[in-house]
Image 1 (cartoon, rainbow, N blue to C red):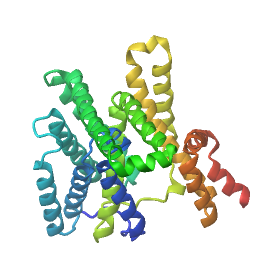
Image 2 (cartoon, rainbow, N blue to C red):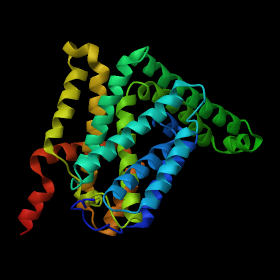
Image 3 (cartoon, rainbow, N blue to C red):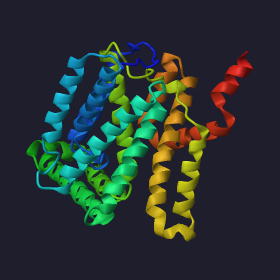
Amino acid sequence: MTQPAAADPARGSWRRLAVALAAFVLLPLVPGVMRIILPIEQTTLLLVAVVASCAVVSWKNGGRFFLALLWVAVAVVVLVSPAGPVDSPYNWLARGWTLLLAASFGLVSIVAPTESFFPRALSAIAVATSLGFALVLVSPGGPTRLSSSMNTEFARRNEQSLAYFRDVTSQPGWKTLAERSPALQTLTDDVADQLETTIKWSSVIVPALLALESLAALALGYALFNRMTTVPIGPPLGKLREFRFNDQLVWGVAVGASIYLLPAFAEGRNAGLNLLVFFGMLYMLRGMGIMAWVSRGPVMSFLLVALGLFLWFLILPLAFGLGLGDTWLDFRTRAQSNAR
């Protein structure tokens, strides 16, 4: 078997990876907004399938057969378990997309073994999306049935979250606290309103949210597997402060914004919005990388995180602007050149 020209496995911080994995797996289980933002609520489904795909690719490149067999067996058990209501279309949609994504990532990893993670992940998502769209077009009901299924699933989760909050706020102990602190009752009402508002948008941008969730699952599964194997399937993930990508992706933002905003493309506004959200989030992440690069000291990093928690409505647009501007200004390279 041919070994890919990959770097030795990077034994990065297990603590940071563990925190990211815990957040990815546990947050969708908490009643609230995350349940109606992530199209596939069972994030373990995606994560296990991605790791199994990585294990198979590693075995093909000379890795341990037992490790590949173990993860494939775990993936099979997870995949045959229901995702959501047993008789719902979402149950099949979630498992079908998971298989497409894992298979596409494995295929791309075999074809381009020396490619870095991000281009590999984008290619896998593009392949899975193309195959999925083709399958939807030839299936009964087509895109309309898919949209209806996701709307029903989001509505189910939203109702469960609202029922949970109603149950909590009806408890005597909570009522006593609310009487003592009116701000607590206001916060509860705001959460309920936020759920209702979020579901209206999340139902429209399911493709973008699914692509972003899949990108996160691929990154976490890729990093997790490369830490547990002696035969990594590619270069390790880079640090956030070094994150950048091909500047040609700016056309995703430009095309998405044009379709969404221009009256001539009114019939395709939803498609434009999905492109804008997906590529906009990528540039927002790139902008956060620039912020992390600027605030490399522990004090500045702490301040940045604190600002992000309390002033996210300012930090996120700023990050998007920095990421988009970096396409032409290349802040980090220019600053390093000036420092020499």
